[in-house]
Image (cartoon, rainbow, N blue to C red):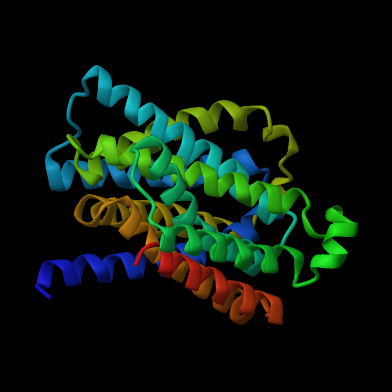
Length: 296
């Protein structure tokens, strides 16, 4: 293995660790701030850092043609606005560790979307892996009680679970749109433009939620969580992820999302004291096995 692929793999693994931490930081912020306000602050931090990074590493942002403009607008709508609306919405209602486990579905959903959008053929073993990944997700969602879930879906699939499923679909769209954007834009430029568009969308929505904020509850830990989300969960994570998409392709880069639930559940147990259920361990392992088979 040459040094460059090794560096790409190391960055993708570190990105998974940073994103695992976003569920803990997001949980802390979601209990204090409305979803769109929290997300707008996150990307306000990220936008400033990304602009500085673009200026330092690439001399600024390139002028966009019409296709690039539309692509970055779509990136901001999917991976920034919709994902964060669903991300913070989910973390208001379900534990951080449980939310993180849904990320195991991301590579499978991305592979399915790539098959539809880019007409990538899925061989039989990939279909088997997709089925296995969804089985693992079902174990996590139902907490291993399929019978009880069938009788009362509301006990297993609530607003938080639906928000996370929508977030995964938004991220799959972001990954695939990014494949087109990266044909002519650098990871830094694509991420910066996506963050700027996303910040615009989020700010418009956040304006209607400002009256819901109780600023007396916003302490240093909330600001620290939002700063972490903006710096590590967004700037470093998004740029390194797109470097992986450019070097390995969307499906292979998305495989590293398998590590996000591992870090997310571990951090949630260590930092927030959340319990680790047997269904979470078993379902997460089955989902990871399915994703591994899908991307073999």
